[in-house]
Image 1 (tube, rainbow, N blue to C red):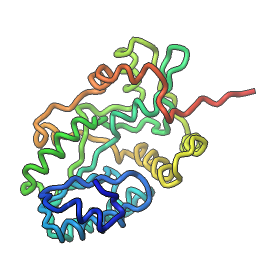
Image 2 (image 1 turned 90 degrees about the horizontal axis):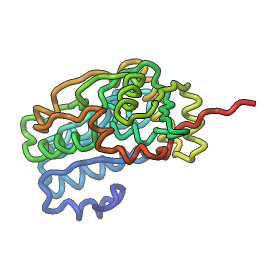
Image 3 (image 1 turned 45 degrees about the horizontal axis):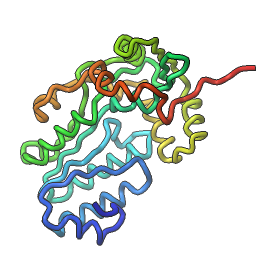
Length: 251
């Protein structure tokens, strides 16, 4: 696929395409890329698009990225494309990204407090995306939230992980400020840090909560539980993930 910020390249890539999945990383340029896509797709006769948005996408979002996603939803809704927006809650894959393995124990140090969500796997989302591309008409202009099977907080997630992995696993809530500081020290982009800091607050306020049956009804698949995900990705928990928040030393 061409660069999402290259209008000519995107136009060339979309020739002969009937349905497209649009997914931009959490980096600056989403609005530009979506505009380029809309123009290129319209010019080349693309019929439908599945747009990866976010459950926190709304006009009043504190996250710049989430607000941009809301704007891009509105932009695509104004085209002639059959358009479906998917709004997933936190991915189950986050558990591997923010996981720390230390002294034969596991740690999740995250700023989500008691916030609840039903982790959704990338594989489950892919089934929904594929189904929407194959049959776009029934879901035109829909904004579909995607959830796993069970709403949990991170204390409950840690207990499930502990039982599945056979080692102690601890959830240690941290402040948004400590979380942002750790991400800055790891060199993550400021746009991403601003987004993650604000969705942490959203999570505490219930924006990521809920469950539904979209994966079963549209993707024709029973979504994986946290236990099933951890079992399938057990090797990923043998070592720490790339972005874990380290415990602060004292003295």
